[in-house]
Length: 100
Length: 411
Image (cartoon, rainbow over all chains, first blue to last red; front, side, top):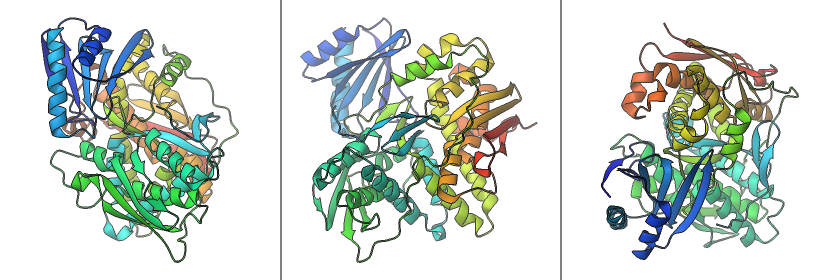
């Protein structure tokens, strides 16, 4: 899947990346693919009115949110992940996203 | 994630209480700007005020936890859980005993998230984790059933400066320091607020949807939400540090300057927290479908404010040039009267900044177009002509039945 990454420059600056995708992303498929690449995810869902937010957390490293915005997958580094870990996690996430 | 917390839940008067302590949501930008304001003048001695205010609430919440048990270690575990749940980060009391010791703060809202809120390239001249230090001292005193001022807290490392985990040294004082007693909910009105003003916004539905969000700290004790880092903070902490700045600056003839600075902190809060909410996916899903007019943006945000623990806000009058908000039990008034008694001037500084800030976002910035809420845009909206300025026309802390804030466009 083609995507474009853009940083969210607000108060979580440096932590929050928005991936603009050209088609809808199935959260379960994305999360399963991440797990097959070695991630250990805690999954949760949250209801926002008619919208469902799908969250997957690799503890102390990153969180992926699907459903917060149409056409966007949110990727948030955890504050305590160091720069090397962040690069690796982002590479893993982008690899999986590209394969969808 | 299982955390052992004191009884926590909604009470009357638009409050959420943890033990008996009222909680309010604020973001890292407000925390950064408020603390920057407090620390502008070294001679005011505000570092100690911040630390002691944190000690006051840390002590109060743990002593008020009826389910904390008698074991000091269990109480300190609860203190760690409270710290994480409310978005302050992670704190580790494993190396302390009743003589004190070293407290580690692997992740700190005040250490890390202030850096995120500060303009790029900011280098802090001093540590920022005074809250962490005071909270640790108060919690340890409560755990060992000592006087609240039994321990001195010395900041050894702050993440805002070193990047490394925070470190606080606690030591038993020869004689306890006087620490104020937290006032809990303070004094509330007996008045019943009217229902929300007529609009297209279904406020009960908005509140129900917001109540379904997980706004507790994640595994590293932070709350990344609405594009900001939230804290579910102690109202009495904000009140103590804000009113003490007001009192100390007032003592040197700078009362109006102090008020202006505290209102400015409210502008920052409105811009980032309100702006973050109104440009969020949550807003788009829950509130935006109900919006049919520009006025509804204001009514929708006021509905959200009523989930923040700030009191009960009601829109009394709204035009494109003016907003009158009446607030029952604004947390500044209830806290002020609980701490100091009746006020002789309006003291709802955060509320003033919030009301004017809301109008700036809706009628000056057109937040419906989802602008980038950065520092340059803040200056464009809040520091140029055509914006809104607030004045407080009633104050519950002065004996009025409610607080009233009027925000009008400056021609």
